[in-house]
Amino acid sequence: MDNTTDAFAARSPQMLPGHDVATARHVVAASLLAWMLDACDFFIVLFTLDDVARSFGVSLESVLLAPTLTLLTRPIGAFICGRAADRYGRKPVMITTIIVYSVIEVLSAFAPTLATFLFLRTLFGIALGGEWGVGTSLIMESVPVSWRGMASGILQAGYPAGYLLASLVFLLLPVLGWRGLFILGGSALFSALYIWIRVPESPEWLARQRHGGATAPATAGLWPVIRGNVALCVFAVTLMAAFNFMSHGSQDLYPKVFLGLERRLSHPSITLIVVLYNIAAIVGGLFFGMLSQRIGRQYSIALAALLTLPLLPLWTLPHSTVWLTVGAVCIQFCIQGAWGVVPAYLSELSPPSVRATFPGLAYQCGNLIAASNALLQASVASFLGTGLAPALMLTVGGGAVVVLTLTLLNARRNHGGETSGVSQD
Image 1 (cartoon, rainbow, N blue to C red):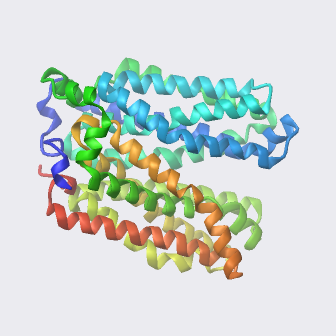
Image 2 (cartoon, one colour; image 1 turned 30 degrees about the vertical axis):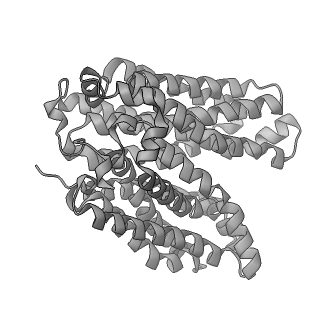
């Protein structure tokens, strides 16, 4: 699969005009901020579902359609925004995407009916799906080669950081109400302003534009690229589905259902565990992202996935709050550690003409496949009649095995090619 990339990972961005350390730092900070605030806006909805239901006088099940619709439209956003960024540039599309999801978040606060609210959350999914892929291409094309592992981990840390931020914002619910929290979520507009003022366009994209390298593929469309890279596309989507089964499998039902209903932990204890394992997730992403700069992207991902497997019993079988906390912290360090390498890995796998489209679309399609995670875990638990613990271990462990297998197989194919990510300086 190494024939799908160009000199992206071999050529230092310092060779391109407009590169300096200060600019690279602004790009990293802006990409992290945008993804963190995007994730925060998404989690605010999940935290306030029951409040939204009471406000509209409907059942909780009716409002649960909101995150489902957001999930379903994320691949659409990845495609639309990615193609636009490949054609018109990363920076303007990134700014537009942030403005759109910020405005939708504020408009959601003024939704008069449930139908309007659901429609707005559907549109929000498009913006949510588009932001990650565009941000990934911008940051990976704008930082020095030796920074890419670290920058990848920092970018992906925005997701658990957004969860933590949403948890803090949620404390204002008694004061602001759910509508006030949504208005507050619109403050993500400031990240668009930051990008407009301090972040330049991707030097890689500008170089391809000057040499006419991006015009022809963009005009020809995405399908010729897919037809020429079928194996790569299947590999990437399958890999991202396994990644999403790892992450969603360890998060969706774990806090409220497993810890709350089955282990009967108190709400403060659950909150503490969630905060601690999100901090561990951030640290893990940074650690394995930087490690990938030394041992390669694929081996860093494989190591994190491998370490996940022996931690599964510690994560689910204890009844002690202390050991459950230790298990949750350790497994999220590894799972999100593997995720920390993903932005760099997918960017270096991507065909150059669709580098803003490919990573985001692969991620969101894999996420869509893994959308059945909660239902699958509940069904397995019901079938076995043993509670959630075996179901959690099976889904997360299965995802880890697939990630481990695919990355090692691709590493053998590449033999230290571009996706190795090993620093040469």
